[in-house]
Image 1 (cartoon, rainbow, N blue to C red):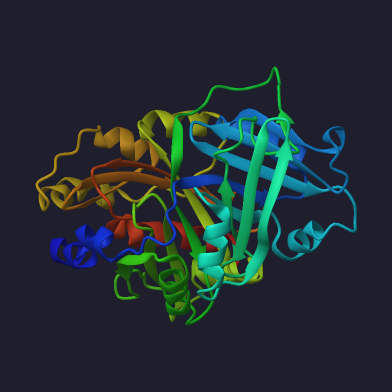
Image 2 (tube, rainbow, N blue to C red; image 1 turned 180 degrees about the vertical axis):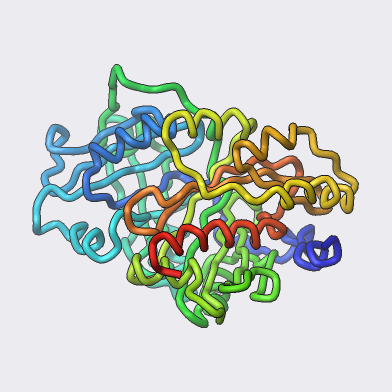
Length: 386
């Protein structure tokens, strides 16, 4: 096992050496989901995941065709947007894909330069550099398309002092359940179609200057029935990480194929959010009704101490407590990580969330892939889509 993980992580320390600096990214600014009912979705993310009210745009603020609720927890900002009439193009997205991620917004120093550098390298423009102003200053926005209908927006906010963005007002509510300890977005995973992964890997390399620092093939990510291939892309400072998955041949339909069928094209499969105390976070989420994938079998947890010993790491958490919550453990040369995955957060088996706590490890749970896939396959079996 050690040799396999070691080969997967080969070259990880070289990530900063190969990255280009024409697109400096400061972090994830926000993620926008197009949803069928933004008011109800906002209530769900507050009640179940502990997000707090932050900003609002709708009829009361002068927005006539769409409504957006912004919820926030620590450094994570999520916009939930719905159309207000049948003419809004947002309808087309929801009819085709269901609830899902439309925009991954990246915080930059210069949105105009970011758009120019990426479009001249081959990106398809979504929005030319646009200045939006109000009494609090100005925001510069621009955007490009990535896989499917997903968009990367570049947000320049150095000259803005308002709550969120022009057009939004502060959202005040008496109902704000306690946060559950979510800190920031660790990574976001995209699913693309058959034989498209390398195309998008090259796109991120050429257009955005990212580096492919981890790769997994179908020999490493497989079960008896299904398989996939994945490559992890990262920008130069390591703040933005986008794994990209594609299906691989197997006896039955993989989770990636199921996603592509129900999302009706490429898109964001899951958002991984970081916590400093995964046991408390997952305990709180379970108490609020969040459903997670089924717990791995006893043999999985019995093998954890040996897997960590291969890298000279010692588990600090109580393994029985991890088992009772269904939290998985993986390790690399730098340390270990703890992770768990929710069931889909809408009726279509598409978008879900990952809760992750890193104890030094920089990988993505390669040692957990088989157990994870088996849990997902059990869900697929219940859905009749395996």
